[in-house]
Length: 167
Image (cartoon, rainbow, N blue to C red; front, side):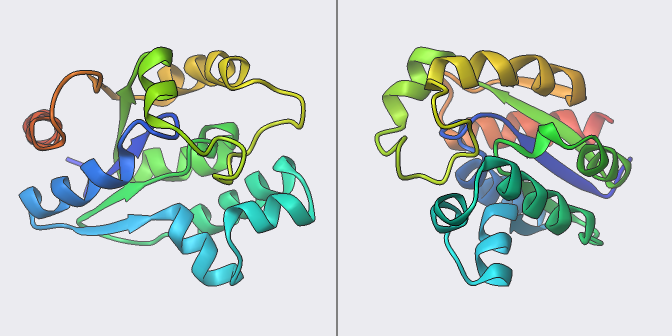
């Protein structure tokens, strides 16, 4: 069994919230790589995007993920972590990767601040285009997939914990 769990998925999938609950269920620590970026760079994700572009935010995200050297942690990644093969290879080596699958309509319902949330996307890319582009990447790296559309956050955490214990 790998010593950590990494949660991947779209913004709004519940990675951070479910991750905190999951960490409590398993008595693990919790790391949100978006928060790590903001602490270490002393800027919000949106500021990084505004000052450069989505490629730079993805590079920064990769750098922060590659520094992770933890044990018994739940790691909630930014939605764009899957663009980095290096980052995902690192996470796959130290953790079980879990994809929180959420339908587009549900993500759209949950995300109200799409333009200011610090989402790493091309300037003219729609949210639907981003969603469709990322689905194959999430599928590619996921060792466990959970339907995160209708379960409560607590139910999701329990389902992931059970699946993790079986690995």
